[in-house]
Structure formats: structure tokens, C-alpha cells
Image 1: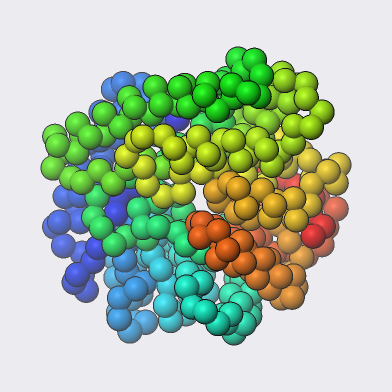
Image 2 (image 1 turned 30 degrees about the horizontal axis):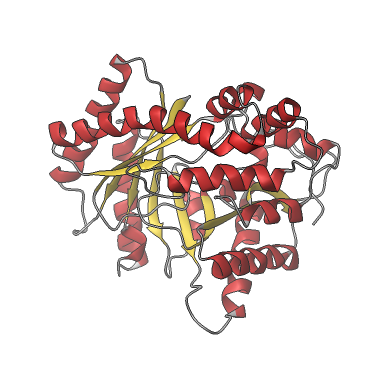
Length: 367
């Protein structure tokens, strides 16, 4: 297991970068150094802000983003999020900046279903893919996502501090190798996870006091790496082989994991659920080649787990993306749960691959 992201949350009040932001970034780097001394791997440092929600003209916003982008190049901050989008011409912003992440939040609290919002979201997703399919790797449509999640692109700041997200498919695999039966699955999982994450909670609480910066919490979501030994879905396979119950399916496993994560008495933030991103999970991506998984399967899992439809290549058609938005909207609104929709519309090919070290080859999924 390693830390996927150590994320700083910062609220801009001025139209320029001040000393306070630089100081906060240096604090984040000191926390990183202390983790390194303990041989704890940190994959990325990130900055999440409130810029998109501020009322600034497009030219002013570009000026601020340019200044931040130049500063972060020298500070080893790989990803930067401007937060919840309002009326920015975001396809133009994403075209200019590679490290930039943006999330468009769709309002699901109104009593009337707004089809215009659905069409706008689908159109924007398609437009970004026509520039480059990878532009949608940095863009997501978000429903009910709380502030403070360290995972991108659905991250935004309304309270300054830092939070932590993990890459921990290997941890879930190790735990499931020792599970004796389904009856004691949740008890055993809770015991192991609480011990694992309590260490990190105490460590970051101490860092918060030591560095005089607010610790917002741990996003204890299970998130995969791209290798088989890092796959979250491979843990599902391990559990099925171990228990040997014909009626044990993915939905039951996902529901059990999510229930345990929600009940853990820790300082949590963000999703704190289960992430099954198709192009980021080795064993999940492998299923696509045998046509053993469909989009509706992932949607069904979204009803009990965390992230939603994530890094899924889809057909380059507005109506296809609109259907996904409407279904994700419905699930999130019905169950009042955080979901992210991050799809990668592409031309239809036999194998879909991207120029990214974070994404695996897959097949296009049928709905």
C-alpha cells in the first residue's frame, strides 16, 4: 500500500499568488519528507483550490492559472485542480494546461430534472475528447461530492488544510487471502483496516499540530494501481476462490467493503468508498477483452460503492454520454451518495489505448 495523493486545499482570496500559498506548499513538502523518512511511498503531491467558483473574468482567471502552473513546475506538484466549474470556457483552459484538473458539479438537489444540464455536460465531454481523449482524464462530472476529497478531478476546496488518499488494492488482496468465510468477512475486514489506518490518522494529526495546518482527514477508499498485484478487482477474485460460494457476486462484495469503510471510526473525508476505474485496474480492464463486463454492471456496482463510472472508454456520441449522465444522476440523487462520472469518448477501435502511464488498454464496453 502507498499514498496515492497528499493533497493541499487552498482558498484564493486575491487575484495573485501570495506568500501564504508558498508557505502552505512548503509545509506539504515537509510532511512528504517525514513520510519518506518512514519509508512510506507518496505517489503525487496535489493542489486543490476554489478558483473556479470565484467570480473572475476569463482573462483574469487565465492569468492566475498561468502563474500557479509555472510555480508548481518547480515544486514537484503534479496535479492542480481549480475546483467546481461555473461558467468558465473550460475546454479552452484544459487545452492550454496539462496538469490542470476541473470538475463540473451538476445540481441534483432541485426537485425538477434539468435536461439542459445533462445535454451541456455531454456536449462538453465530447468537445474535450475531440481535442484529445486524455483531456477527459482531467475532467469529471460530479454528483454529491463533498469538499476535501484528495482524489481528482472531483476535488475542490472550501476549507484550507490537507487530506490523504491511498493506492491500496494490494492491502485488500492480502486481507481477503485470510478470510475464512463470508459470515466473518466484515468483522475481519474492519479489524484489519482500523489498525492499518489508525496509524496514518495519528501520524497526520501529529503533523497537523507540528506544522500548524489543518488535517481534513483520510479518504480511505480502495483505489487500484495498474498492476495485477495492485488491483482492487483482483481482490474480488481472490475472495471468490477462497470462499467458493456460487452465490457470492461482485455486488455483495462491493456492498460489504463499502459498509465497513463507512462504519470505521476514523477521521475520514471524501468518498471513503470503493473505486473501480476500468482503465486503472488490471483485472477489471482484462474483463473487457472477454466482454465479461458492461457499463450497466459498473452502474449497478455504483449503487453500493464509491466512485461511479470512472476512466471508461465510451463511444464518441452525445446520446451515449447523456445516458450515462442521467443514470449516474439518478443513482446519486436516489441514494444521496457521492459519484463521479469520468468517461473517455473515443472513435471505435478493436483496442483502446491512451498515451498515459496511468491508463491500461481496454475494449469499448457495451451499455
